[in-house]
Image 1: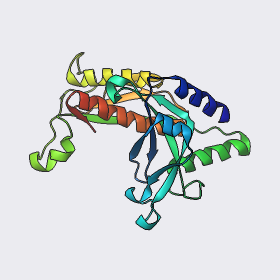
Image 2: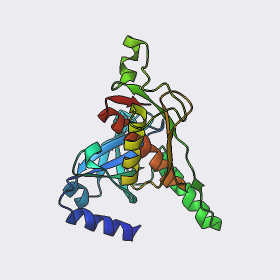
Image 3: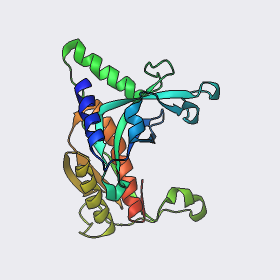
Image 4: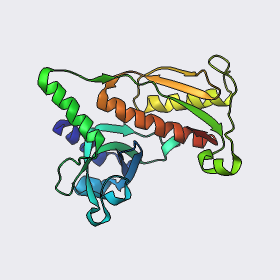
Length: 233
């Protein structure tokens, strides 16, 4: 860990094009939260704080301050055409005000569990994820559903009925390119059985890495869909 941290810090210090670091963590309900820290500030301090009372299930207002520790191994370059220029993303561990792992940080608990398994008898917990979603016409259609009462599918075809350059296939192709740019080891990308349904598979990995990539998968799909005036669900 110390060697990786040293390498990442040196890289950030020397790379002038990177201006900010996005630190990500997950709440109890599986939502991804992200805070952008100025690169110089992040490299100069170990006191990265945030308001835990704003996260459902974390802390009360009177005990709002929580801290973030950086997991320098979980470091991802973010394609600028999708996420904007000058940023990298790293996952953080949520810490209490005492600096100890926070009990409601499930990512931290998973990290500790897999490390304990390995220390006990050398067991490595690998996970292979199969994630599927749907694509709809228009941006942020969940917010307008109460007014419209419907979701508009971009494709009515199934498995093998989606042709090259149709909206679903263009979304899949673009999202798959973003996965590759972020270090995913893609296996196969294709429409699924349902209309407007997609699936993009990536290679198995350690449980913690797989969990991080599931969150990134959802994030990049949402971003790609938004850029194409669609919504990924």
